[in-house]
Amino acid sequence: MRTRYVTLLPGIARIQAINSNPAFLASTSLSVTFLSDPDVIGELLPPPLEAAEPRVTISVYEFAESNCVGPFSGASVSLACRYDGNDGSYCLAMPRSTDAAVVFGREHYGEPTKLASCHVEQRGHFAHGTVARHGVTYIELAGVFDEPLSASGRATVSQHYSFKFLPEASGEGLAFDPQLVRVTHRALTHQLTRGSGTVILRESRHDPVIDIPVLEVEGATFSHGETRTSGEVVATVPAEAFLPWAFGKHDDTRQPGQISSCFLPRR
Image 1 (cartoon, one colour):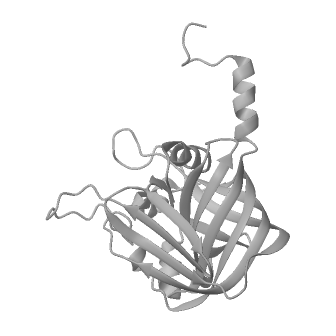
Image 2 (cartoon, rainbow, N blue to C red):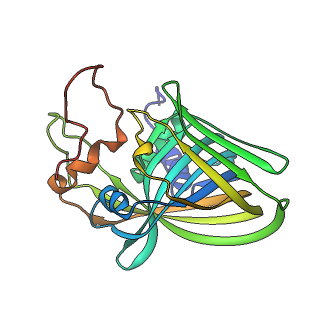
């Protein structure tokens, strides 16, 4: 084979074996959970996802190792939801620190990944996490933990939902009916502590998470662990019906002062 752009069958098998069993290891994570406005959460959930408790979890984390994209840091904004009678969460935003992590999440699971600067650190009883893009630190988390990290050994399984789609080549509409992807997270927490937390969301025209009201912070966790994921398509959604939610993955490319409603959902 003369070029590395073409992969032979042994290489294809190796890549597919990794992609079907991705492992994200040696994590450090700060998460804060809060209650928000039910009407806002209901508007943000594309059908067929249904509203559950108006609960939002924002996490900032670092993975020192993975078997698919190398080390990276990232964050997630997850809205509690239900699908087919089962509880889960909808991935509204998933910033990532490397292009490999951005591409993996978008192309495999349809996750709304964007390149960003994400940091999390712990100092004594305090933990701090930030997410920044285009010079704006638009997510800032803080946690206060009276108890030290303790051994957990806790295994959890959770369902996360995203929509996989592409724009039509003409620029009008979508190329196919979006696929609703259910990603199963199998997490093993090695160390964990719980405490109180704060959330600061700042204005960003590219990442308008500030539109989600923080009404009551329920608590914070700081942990070390690992996660393995697997994905499956569980439904398709008519492209025209999904279109109002399709632009949340994009930055706002309008010039300052330009009048446009192309990024505003229409009902």
